[in-house]
Structures are given as C-alpha cells and as structure tokens.
Image (tube, rainbow, N blue to C red; front, side, top):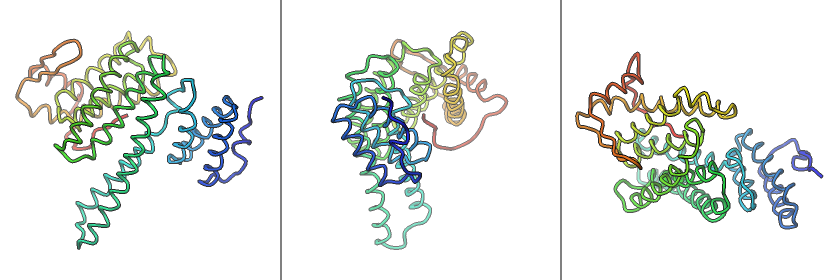
Length: 312
C-alpha cells in the first residue's frame, strides 16, 4: 500500500517542530521494517524542504535515506545546499570584518565567535556527510554515475573545509591532499560516463575550482575547465546526450564558460609555458596557442572581472 502525501504532510504549516516529528516517525517506521514507505516519505519531504528553501531540514531526511541498502539518485542527495549556506555566511562575515573594522576588542571577539560557531557547524556537517559516503553510500554503490558522484561529493566537502583553513597551514595541506585523492577517484570513474553527463561535467567544473582556489594553479584550472568544455560540446557528444541531461548539462557548460572568462586575464598575464599533468599524459601548452584558446572562448571580448569562481 502506497503512503499518501497527506500522511507525511498533515499540516499546511511546514515548520521545524513538524519536521522533527516527521523525522522521528520515519526513523520509527524504518526500525519496524516499513522500508519502501519510509524511503518514499523521506524523499518526498526532502524535495518539499528544497522547494521551501528549508535546507537545514533537508539534512534530516537525507540521514533517513543514508541507511538504506539501495542507491538513491543525485537529486536525493542535498546536504551540499546546507554547506553552501554556511560557506556563504562565513564569506559574508569575513567581508563585514574587512569592510567595517570592529571598534574594539569586544566587537572583534563577538564577530570571531560567530564565525567559529558557523565554522563548527560546517565542519560537523561535512564530517557527517563524508562518513556517510565512505562508510554507507560508496560501499554499496555499483552504478558508475553514483560512484563518480559520491567521490565528487567527498572531494567537495573536503574542499569546503580547506577553503576556510588558514593558508599554508598543515590542516589545509592535509585537506587538499585528501580532496585530490577523492577527485582523482571520481575522475577515474567518470571516464566511463558520457562527456555530456552532468555528473562528469560538474566534476570537471569543481576540480577546476579546486585547482584555482585551493591549490592556486591557475593554468591547470583553466586547462581542466577548457578540456571539459571542449569534450562536452563536440557535435558527436551533443547528438548522444540524453534528454534528461540537457538542462543540467547546459547550465554547467555555461558555468564553465563563465569561469574561463574570469580566469582569462590571469592566464594571459603569464608569459611562461604552461605544463599541466593529467592522468594519462603531460600536456605542454605554449603561451601563443593558449592565448588563441582564450580568445576563442571570450570572443568578441575578454571580461576583466575579478570574482569568486563558480562551482557546481
């Protein structure tokens, strides 16, 4: 018997108390063996919370889903939304601290205390997600897309933590090394996916941002994004693209283009040859052909925009 939406949504008012009550009910039903109904209910509530922009509450229902012996789709994994909100909050607080210098030690302490609190929430969230992926989700995944996606998520969460670690600190170095291992595993798995697959495109996008923001290798960031853009927009790949991938793939391709435009002035300012190591070959790009690629991407003009790169 299929559980109706009204069973999980008896009230018109969607609030945290209701969410916690439903979460407890789902956990109870899960323990009693009502697996399929609980899974459907958790997925439904997760989607409803996303539509209502209640990302903190989405995490509760993802926790319910993470214990099942089945693979869930990419759309049912949404903890990254919450992590994104916390990262945005940390960036905003840093901007406020730089723009409006606190007038005394007490104000500085208050601001730092708020940042530490949000950072702890981010660390706890990322650690929980990584634990769920490594110990529950990945071991039971058999689909190439799922394996790629989960390794990518691990790399993303480690990148988030490295982003707010002190520059040149041992902690940042360790987090970056772990993120690279996860991204390398995702890249290896993604080689069996179509170049237009949104998971593969999103992986390339996020690896390029990792190289730019965390490692500081602008040239490799550019080449990684450019390669994904070239492979994902060739006529043969576009002809084979699945209809359900078109919307997400188009969005990610545009994000790749946006980042390439933002990075172009930095790459053009370099007069040294670019030597980028890939999994299978060493690609040596001299300044002239690289400039030609940049000009092709940015036609009819280059954008001199200084902004944070965009990641999926």
